Structures are given as structure tokens and as C-alpha cells.
Length: 512
Image 1: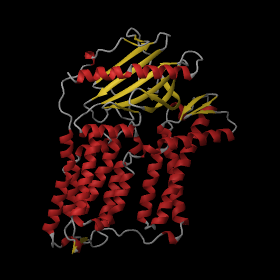
Image 2: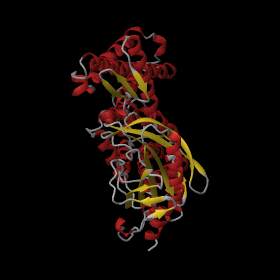
Image 3: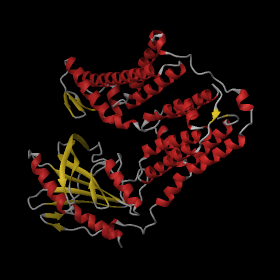
Image 4: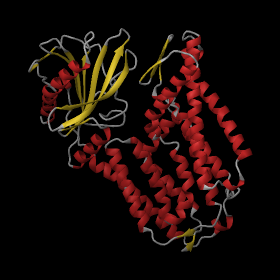
């Protein structure tokens, strides 16, 4: 191993070069941080600045060595770049962010060696708290919050009925939406706990326990926040400021008080054996930065890292969907009569899914011989891009305005090529009307309702030179007091008979 000298400029130039190569992904991430409509990750800019600061401190804390053996980190960098290209091609944005962070770390490893690069693990771990990958915890946090608030209301003597993520009291109904799950407070608590442990030199084992304690604190705080809002609505007949105007600020006030008390208790009561040193020394080693030995080798490694990083965008260019003639939904010749199902273009559905419009799409109501009415949305997405894709959390069966989800589950269906499970949603409007909704995807003749499985089928299809994904949503109106089994039977019959014919009709347009 050689003593590492004058590498700071090369490392900085390499990292900036990688960010430039992956500019679009970095641009998308910054847009998430600055999205005022969803401020969950508004702390992202502060986390980035903190990560840069700690990187600088670690760089100056000791002399580094230039390790032999550059090809292992280069191979890992190429693998990360190819992974990014795969995620980019099938529009999995969250994994793109993780891949970019990995690519930047491996670019550092190419320059100074993998073992030396591991000294900088903390800034990269801290950056994960600024990546929008935490929504996976949303359903669990919603469940914990909803159940806990329901129990607190019961202990308070307030009569409440819990259905899914809805809590009904005498004054009204509260929905514990994903935004009320407490993810924003949980992620902020993790970031603060990580920074506290780094500054104070906390031992890894106790550091992990400390982060878990911060997570528990944030979850309890969010439960208290939601409970306060519900009680305020109960006492004021839904007229309180927290109910009618804003309850997010209440959350941040409670979080600031809770985290302040948490940090104060940490500084006063954590025993000395939790710490191994008094933080990381600040400032670069000037003697280390002035020497010039091995400068050409360092610059060469930086160049290799940039060339390897180019593999990602290059592969995306190779996998790009070729230009296609303009697609017009008016070209679609939909079937008017299939079995007992007859198209009713004269009827306008009172429900529409909240989805991005496909390159080809149609919504049509069908009616059976017995009078059952079923609405079909069929969208075909060929030129997909972020925000305009078939498989996305943004595509929802309810607009949460005129229709709200009351219950959910899964149902097994078979429309050819084997059975599969679809998510089932029971929606209700302001007038008490209800409808049952199913949603699934089609990729190259394969049907699936699982987003990850469908994304994998998309990737395989893309590698074979085929592109395009279908989004299928069927919805049946619940008539009177009829049971769900009758609706399910008609939805299965409709899906088996009608949906494959629409798939064939869409394929016919694409083959022209």
C-alpha cells in the first residue's frame, strides 16, 4: 500500500462527475426533497450538507493509504451501474436512488481502495435517511397508529369504531392516511440519532440501540399526535383548527419537544461505556494534502471510475424503446357484445380511477343480461417515464374525494394462463353507494397483480426487445343489500370473457 496524498481534489472531481453522469436521478431526488406537497423528505438538503461535512471530517481525521487492487471495486461499480440501468429502464425510482449512492461510494473505493473507503461508511448511511425508500414501512406504521389510537380512545371513554385505517366517532370519520403514519418523524429521528452517535463516538452496539429508541419515541409521539387530533374533533364537533386546517405543525411541535427531551436525557444519563471516543477530529491533515506522490495513479483511478460509471446511461440508451407511430385510442375497436356482457357507451360512469393516462386507454361500462353493470379501465403504457407508468403507487382505484376506500383484501381470479391473486377494494361515496374494485397488470401476455413481479416481467420483456405494460381495473356497483359473493362471481366472469379481448384489441393496434 502507498501513502495516499493529494487525493482530495480527485475524489471531489470524481464524485461530481458521477453526479453529472446521473444528473437526472439526482435531479429527481432533489425534486423529492423540495416537494412542498409531500414534505416527508424536506430534510434531505440538510442531510446532504451534514453528510458532506462528516465526509470532510473523516477525510481529515487520519492519513489514508492507497491500496493495491483496483479491479474488484471497478467490477462492483460496473455491477452497480448496470443495476441502475435496469431500475431506470423499468422506472423503479427508489432503487435508482440506492444504486446512485452505491455508485458514488464505489467510485471512492476505486480511487483509494475498498478497505480505505469503508472508513467513510457513515456519510453514506446517513444519506439513506434522505432517500424516499421508507414508504415500505407505511402500512405497518398506519396499522400501529390506528390500532393504538383506537385503544386510547376506548380508555378515554370515547366510543369509536375502527374499520381498516378509518376511525369513526360520533362527530365524524378520521382516516389514518399514509401521510399520517409518522414516516416523516421516524426518518428525522433516525437521522438525528445517527448524527448524535457519530459526534459523540458511540459504540456500534449501543448506537444501534439508541437509533431504535429514537424510532420508538417518534412512533409514540405520532400516536399521541393523532390521538390529540381525534379528541379535538370529538370535543369541538369537528370544528377544531387541528381538524379543519392543519395538524402537521402540531406534529413537528410535539416532535421538537420529544426529540429535545430525548437528546437532553441522552447527554445526562447515557453511561460512559456507550462511548469509545470523543467524536471525530475536525479538519484535514495539511501534511497529507500537500504531498504529491502517486498523483498520476490517483488521477488514473478517478478516470477509470468515471468510465465505469458511464456503463449505466450507456445501457439505458441501448434498452430505450424505439420510436413508435402516434398511438390513438380512437383507433381501438372495442367489442360491443361478449357473452352476456354488452357495452354501454351511452352510460357515463360515476367513478374513475386516479391513474396516469396510458398511451392507449379506454374506460367503458358493460352491462350483463341480469342488469349487472361493470366499469372497465384498460390502459396500455408503451413510452413509460417517471410519473407516467402502469406500475406505480400513484395509480389508485379511488380518488379519495368522491370515493373513499372502506375495506380491502385479495381475491383469486383466472383469466387465462393460470390463476393469480388481485387486490380487492371496497369503495364508498358520499351518498353511501358502494362498489368493488380489482386492479392488476399485464406484461407480454402474463397477468399479475404483484408490482414487484410485474416489474421483473417488464425487465425481462425489455431485454427481449419488447416493451409495454397494461393496467387493468374493473369495478362493479353494489346493488342494495346484496352480498359480495354475487358481485365477485360477475367480476370473475367479466374478467375472464372481456379483458382478454381488450388485450387482443390493443395488441392489434400496436402491430399495425
